[in-house]
Amino acid sequence: MSQTDLIPLLFLALPGIALGFGFMMLGWMLAMHRRNRLAPKTVVPAQNFFSFSPATVARPGCWLAIRAASPEAVRSALGLNRPQPCSWAEGLRGGHGFFISPRVNGWIIVTGLGLPTPTDDVDATFLFLTALSRTLGHVQYFYASRLLHHHAWARLDDGCVTRAYAWAGETVWNQGRETLPEIEVDVRLFAYGESAATILDAEMNYEKVPRLAARWSLDPAKVKFNSLRPAIGIAGESAFR
Image (cartoon, rainbow, N blue to C red; front, side, top):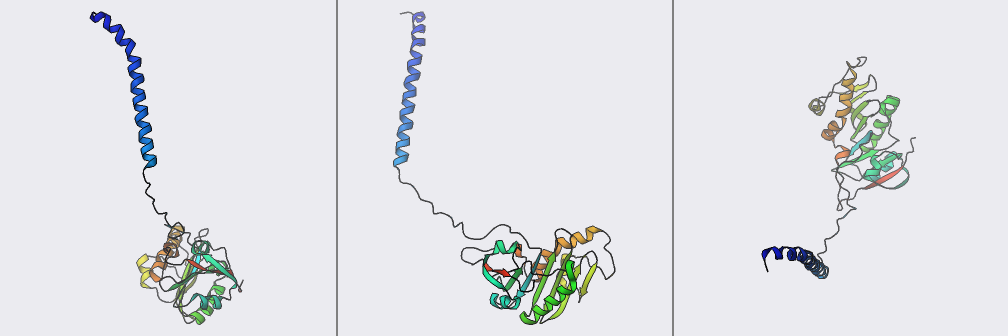
């Protein structure tokens, strides 16, 4: 048989060779699948999705930091009605009359609609804080309005204001000597009757309130919990509303 005669035969044989190779590959794949199916599986333990350690949580617009007091003492001082368990994340959203956190590094955080603000009434804010401090001792107050960029902070001991500043379109409360943390975060303070040079000055103060809180006590949005540390506080209606 000449070389010329072999060429047509090779062309005729190619489909059979390809089909045979395909059957070989299919058999190998079926064998590998059967071996993987019969092999023992490695069980990976499920993660604890109920541990509470978010990267970020909503920062409340107004909150208290109370030192060396129990949640029960704070609850009694606020006259909390219809108390119920409440998670940290839900409590920081501020939809309750008051939310009282568990103890965090020696501090109790309080948020809620029952907290007064200088935007509404600076005198009511002063009276509320001094009354609370007479009962609970060291109380800190922070306020930062997202809408208006009004802001305030205060520190009280046993009913006495040691430092307070509030801006609500103008300075409405400025008491005590400026603290070192205020200087460190570079807040811009204005005297009574002095208008902010630009709205940017007020906005910059608004943004610095959490940084000041972190130096005085703690920033609620930066607190981390895990499954070994309870993140359940108490929420209820305010007797002062």
